[in-house]
Length: 512
Image 1 (spheres, rainbow, N blue to C red):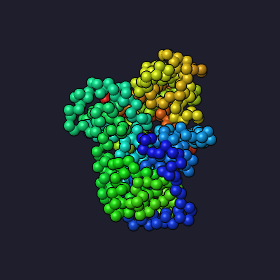
Image 2: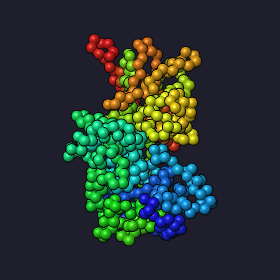
Image 3: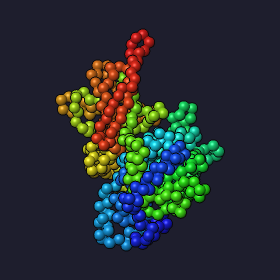
Image 4: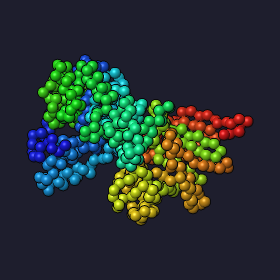
């Protein structure tokens, strides 16, 4: 898309128009008045600009953007050859402030939109973003239209059920997904009811767990030439049709058909407000234009509305079952369906085991064409776990144990390697048991134990994209316990509450 922007770094399309303090306050007052007048009939249209404060660069910003981020990807591709050495140095400094989208936290603006929706202000959000932050923030997904897909989201092509993951769902596209296309697409493409299969190029290798379905999952990422998801497109235009006020947050409004939503609202004479640093394709239809960073505008709006902006918290629902011979743990999403968020479960015979005490096997999603990188079925020992990696939070540092890369150290995503089911002995006769293999159906993890085992605690390890430390839970003597866990990424601490407990008895009074 670099050919859609100027190759002149000084071109006016890269200019940022920032309102002075007095003008900003006056415009915010007007926008707050509009929000109050149109409560319940407001459409929010978001682009990459809403996520820059989380550390994710946008696409069209120029050099020295007031967001603090480096030049947008398309600007960089189009203008980089002409940069001075000073400009290159500044860009390198700004690049160090960026984060991977998987590690990015929802911004104050994302959380403010959640608060507005819960108080009945919004019809919904129409978003062009693929970073998953609207879903991560807890926004009502029934009122969210993601027109360009979501790197964390996969869906069933048969029943439409959506699954939000802690990893990039398209990783399996070129491994198990490629195999499924060879084996299944000739039959599946004849099914008229399939939901947006896009020529079979988006199989992830996973299956739907909705009772009675079992359909194949597709990643939701939209490649150039792909059809947009019809359900999200329909939802977007329905929100646009009903809205009496549309607020654009951080979009240049140049990519169709997404930009048709706000532009149609403005053209029809309904209220359209644009909040963006650069000029947009919707400016000529807007009744109000605010030149400011999105967080600055949304923070001011919420203050004048006297609505607190909630803090982001990561929610986990964990179920642990203990019988005489095994311990099983699994996670459930907010709808009660299996949640593939656990990386490993671990028990230890002593109070404080050394960390880390586990190794990994690279899975099919690690497949690549480079011989210098780990390959599927290679083994490695974990040196630094993802929650303890200060230089690359969310990544695991591993030392290869076999394969062509034996002895080398890599920093890898936990999504491409699985913790091995193994027991590890260490000093003082301690024994650590790991259950890293999960079932295909409910993503449960299991550790085999003995009847006389004195295990009192279970450690749950997540892939830790926010640096989540392992969650240590008190083990039930025998039975089933459900926990609700909330993680605060700012202080990196868990708060755990007990939801339900039940004993598991077999016929005759024995424990199953």
